[in-house]
Length: 338
Image 1 (cartoon, helix red, strand yellow):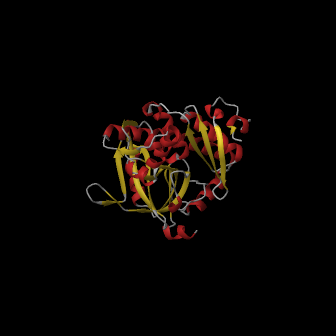
Image 2 (cartoon, one colour):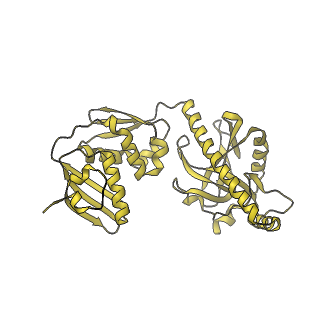
């Protein structure tokens, strides 16, 4: 005999309409560690209720994923525009790398066609990962309505790009503050001689040179990762390699590109190759220091970079927002084998 959800999941105490739904059957796919539950409900289940219940199930049973299928016994009345903000939160929860692209989006609904208007570029990324199909399934599961989801990125403008750069700058400032705090703690616990010795070993540069190009400390304790393994979910990482040429809009090839942004800052951009792949690194610096930093980068034999990997919706690729850049004498081939 079928039971109600509240009779099976008695330790779930939140107010949730799912608890009144009937559990038709449950399937556990052991290989993927995904739990599938088929429900029958007389009442509309909101995306918030679905979201909350899935989080509970994942934590309660230590699962990799949840798949809920809902069968309604009545016709469900809903307004997709009103539900859209919660749907985005649900998609971002399942696919964190989509946050930068789906944030602040709007939609229009015409018959069975749902158009999502993006504030930043990212249509190709979303489609390549099948996010349009994910949203189609969410709508079908929650509202018993089949539709086609399309992305529209035609309304891009310079103002939105500047807002995005400002957002990146704010993140970089917060990271820099954390670096300063960490550096001060290290100074209290380590002697100058030990600090000098470790810096020389870490960067493989002679004592007569200052290896630090950008940041507060040349010491990077994080373990190096290979560029081919960096994803949008990698977070804080350290990488090592050599600068590779990149092309400008005019078709020229340069080692370092720069762009003036607000508040007297300069956005410096350069590609790093480590023998496995190439990735773009970006860093904000003061305008009076930009020229020297660019010269150091262009003349460097090798680099070690500490920063945060994240998706750049304008470049439509994963980049590293750099907090520390150190010159090294290790080349990309050496790094590949280590």
